[in-house]
Image 1 (tube, rainbow over the protein chains, first blue to last red):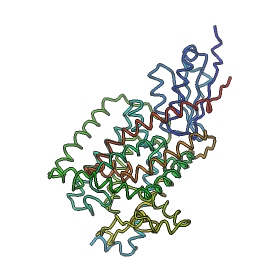
Image 2 (cartoon, rainbow over the protein chains, first blue to last red):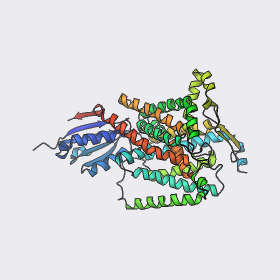
Image 3 (cartoon, each protein chain N blue to C red):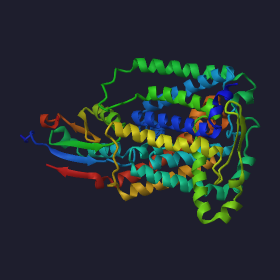
Length: 91
Length: 386
C-alpha cells in the first residue's frame, strides 16, 4: 500500500499569466496525472491571481469527481485538487 | 435650464470629472466581479460554459430598456448617439479581427485596462499592442474607407429605423424575454457555494451596475462607454512627437467625426482621432485612467495588487500581438466590444449587430491559436515538489 500521508505535490504557478492559462494548464495536468491523482499519490496545487479561476476550476474538476479546496493566500488564491485531499493540505 | 446649474464649472472640466468618475466605478466593479467580456465569449465558445455570458446578455437587455425609457422621457441628448454609423461589411470583418485579437491579448480594450490596473504585466503588453494596432489603421484607412462605402448595407443606423417601427416595440420583443429567461435560469441553478474570493460582486450584479453607468454616460457625456478612438489618438500624439509632417498628411487624423451640440452641458462636442486634445480626448481619456485606477483601488483594498514579472516571454509577445490585432480590429469595425455590446446593441444599431456576428467567429479562431500556444509552453510553469 502506498503511503498516502505524503502525496507528491505538483505546483502550478500561473500568477500573472494570460487567461485562461490557469484552467488549460490544470486540465492538462489532470489528464497527465489521472491515475496518480485517483490513487491519492499526487495532489495538484495551483497558485493563481485570476479571481475567476477560483470558480471555473472547481466547477470543472468537481464534475470529474475530484475534491477541491480554494483558499485565499497573501495576494493570490491557492487551489488544491486531489482524491481525497489529504488533511495536511487543508490549511 | 439644467445647463444653467452647471455654469459654475466649465463644460470641459465637467466632462473630465464625470468621465473619470464613471471610469473609476467601472474599473472597480469589473475588478471585483472579474467581468471579462473576452473570457465570457471564449469560455462559452471554447469550453461550452456560457454562464458568465448570461450576465452580459442580462446587462444588454437591461441597458436596452433603460435607453428606451430615457429616450421616451427625452433624457437622451442624441438618438442614435454620435460616432455610430451605417452598417457595412466592415463591421462584420472588424468584429472577426477584434475577436481574434482580444482572445490572444487575454482581455478586450476595457478588460486589458482593469487587469493592468491590478498589476498584470501581460495586459500592459496588450495595451502597448493596442496603441500600435490602433496607430497602424490610419495608414490603411483610405483603402478601407472605400470598402466601407462599397459594402454599406443601409442608409440608416438602427434596425427599428430600417423597418420603420417604433423602437419600443422591438426593445420589448428582445429585452423582456431575455430578462425573463435569465431569471428562470437563475432560479434553476443550485445555490452556489460561498465564494472565497473577497469583495466578490456576482457578474449579473456587475452587469446591472454597468448598465446604469452606461445610461449615466449616455445622458451626461452624450454617448455610452467607449474608449477605442483614444488609443488611435494616443498613437497620433506619440507619432506627432517624432514625425509631425507625416501626421499632418494623414487624412484620418484630420477628420472630425464627433460634431454635435450637447444641450445639457451647453457645449459643442467636437473631435476626431488626430493628436489634438479635443472632446473625444475629454470624454474617453479620463475613462481609460478611471477604469485602470478604479481597478487598482479595488485590488489594493483587497490586498491583491501584485506586479509579477515571471511570465513566459512568449505570453508577453502573444499579448502584444493580440493587442495590436484588437487595436486594428477596433478601427476596422469601427468601435470596440464595450461600445457595440453595451451601447450599440441596446439601441439595436445594425453596425453593432454585425460586429456581434463577427465576434464569436474571431473568438473561436483566436481560441484555437491561443490554446495551441499555451499548450506548447505549460512545462515552464510547473514545479514538482515532495
